[in-house]
Length: 239
Ligand code: SF4
Image 1 (spheres, protein in one colour):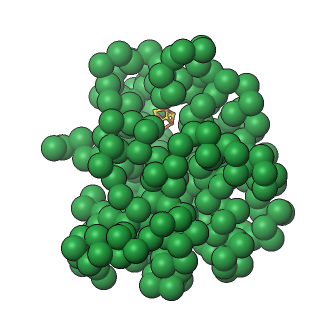
Image 2 (cartoon, rainbow, N blue to C red):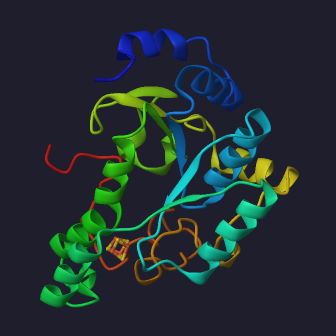
């Protein structure tokens, strides 16, 4: 059971104006059982920079799915050195991956939405859930305008998918432009694929650059047409 109700968090949300205020509240109330989940996109670059300016003991974790692009590993290393921090790296269960790829093929995700969701569940959702069970709160890089599922998200939320811990979304009210302005101004380390037309970084076989005018998440699982394009970390597919 979580430490806060949504009514309590709503009252606190009414007092928070900036991402830094949101993070400060999270550190004061949830640290050290608080960690940032990162895939090293632009939003993550901003939050990581803000976090380490507020608290040098900030905790940062990432999911190594085994299918990440080299640029993402380079970014991890750059961040580790810049902020003098370790990054907690979570791997999927080897047995689960072995059984999946031996039964369905190494590139199973291209064959059906069901296969893609299975791969994301094994490589991302299961390790993530295991980590979240140890925390009272986790920090995301969500922004409202990234996806229609997120339009009513708030800075602090009870995470109904993960044992009612607190989901901390410092940039929820920021725009794409604000995010990049901060990254450039503060010279934050970020994934260099973002300079090559990748607006959203994920696993190498499932991410491609987008064309001018295309939706910002069109580069993820680009072969799917009628999917809500979420990996299961932020939405409940059983609803
Ligand atoms: S993004 Fe692709 S490779 Fe990565 S876990 Fe999901 S389906 Fe598997």
